[in-house]
Image (cartoon, rainbow, N blue to C red; front, side, top):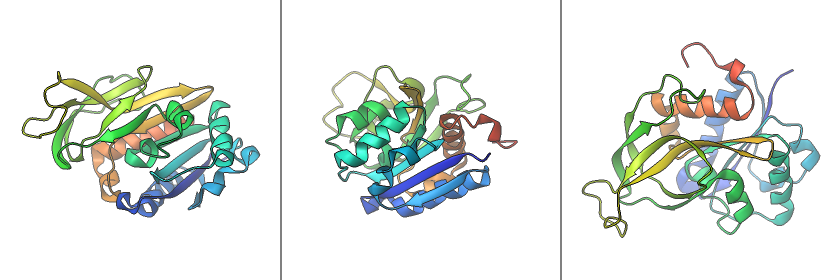
Amino acid sequence: MAKKALVVWGGWNGHEPQQQGEVFAAVLKEHGFEVEVSNTLDAFLDGEKLKKLNLIVPVWTMGQIKGEQEKPLVEAVRGGVGIAGCHGGMCDSFRNNTEYQFMTGGQWVAHPGGIVRYMVNITKRKHFVTAGAQDFEHESEQYYLHVDPANNVLATTTFPLPGVEGPHVKNRKAKMPVVWTKRYGKGRVFYSSLGHVAKELHLAPVKRLWVRGFLWAAHAEGLLKPGE
């Protein structure tokens, strides 16, 4: 039986939510998923339907979610449905909803310098998500996040970045999580802070991480294609 995924896009247009949602949906279909795509948070209203999914992919920066939309979502993940996402589409969503942030494992707070060049360092190489991955340089927003200390951090970046000013620069150097996994109840949670706009999702080292992360969250590691 095919795995089932729901991709829900919307919110701030600067992150190209529709385009990103289309990228995620297309790649999941290539891996054998049945995918539903929605541009309304009402897609979360039917809790019984959500519980039959294998993966939920939120692509919704900022915005507001109603209690009757949030509750079925978090209950589905707590019950075993995977959730996975990238950048602000998952961890700069619904800034007033702490239970959502508890589930996802982090919340964006800053990206000093705007678009900058920075290193992504793989910190755990034996996990399915990062197996075979190498450190790489990336040009985009370097996300500073408030994160759950219980996250299983798979990749980091270092703050402050030389030459980039900000109110954080007089603090000690910090290893900021870029990629992590965690559990929320029985559900698997995957997040990557990479992917400011849709074209970044196609960059080989970025794509490798999120594709593997999405499959891991859905308990679909067996659907990984050779060379991915």
